[in-house]
Amino acid sequence: MPSQQAPIDSPFGYRSTAREVASAADIAGKTIVVTGGYSGIGTETVRALAGAGARVIVGARRVGQAHEVLDGFEGDITILPLDLSDPASIDAFAEAVAGTADHIDILINNAAIMASPLTRDTRGYEMQFATNHLGHFQLTARLWPLVLAAAPGARVVALSSIGHRLHGLDLGDLNFERRDYDKWLAYGQAKSANALFALQLDRLGEPKGVRAFAVHPGGIATPLQRHLTMEEQRAMGWYDEEGNVNEHFKSTEEGASTTVWAATSPLLEGLGGVYCENCNIGALADENTPRGAGVFPHIRDEGLAEALWRESEAMTGVSFPG
Image 1 (cartoon, one colour):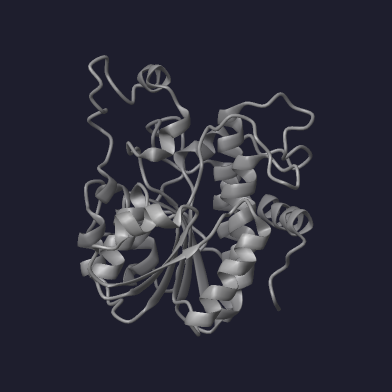
Image 2: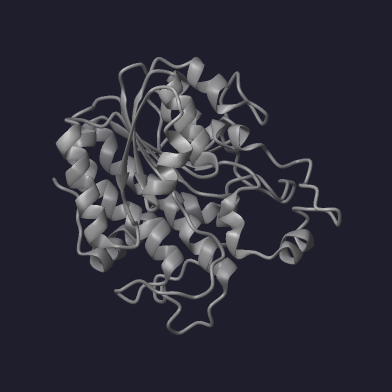
């Protein structure tokens, strides 16, 4: 069963870096898959893990850019093409991974888009939900045999966000066919789905020796904001009038730290299904919780997680082996 959603005693915190966290873990020789590991916090996730001795396989929609970013990094890094909005690309990536690795110790579903204008994939699915959730759902299913081959002790990390507080999850209208499209509700829906995916995956994976975690990386200035104008970002307090980033934002290396912690920390052995932030298990939100933190009740709803799982299977035509 998923673990209690309550903080534990962690030596790391808000300003810890990914490399600090990775250096405290024994991951030399482990095989790790990271989607979108060449932009924003994905870059620092890969840098830290490969630098600590892991073999890292990066799924990249822009392979040329990935090579430009990652080729100078220390460690064993393989880049393979992956477009999470294209089911055929997902299957091809999974086949390519299986051709180069006989197991996956850690799968990190990092890639995402945020607050994009209404677009749809070739199936007609709303793009934020299709890319952030359905793409990773299908990918995890296709890689599941390789993850099981590393069990017990294998982990899956799903990048969620404090954006889950926006909720927006409507199982009767996941594609905004009956609702007016709102880019932030769509983002909240996708990020809620990521956390619920980790919750349900952990329930299914625990008996097989696989644990899953959701992660909120924190506020970070990265290319994820590419669809937002500077005016919008100033209005939300992310930048001041002079263009200076909010002092409470993390650096990209700090932003990658909770991903690396959830993926590698020995403190999480025997735990799973929880939402993590600031290199710890997040606390349940209440009226006193700061705006940028906390776990809202809907992403701990096991019934909702199971219903979303069934809907995801129907939308993708994909189910998990076994």
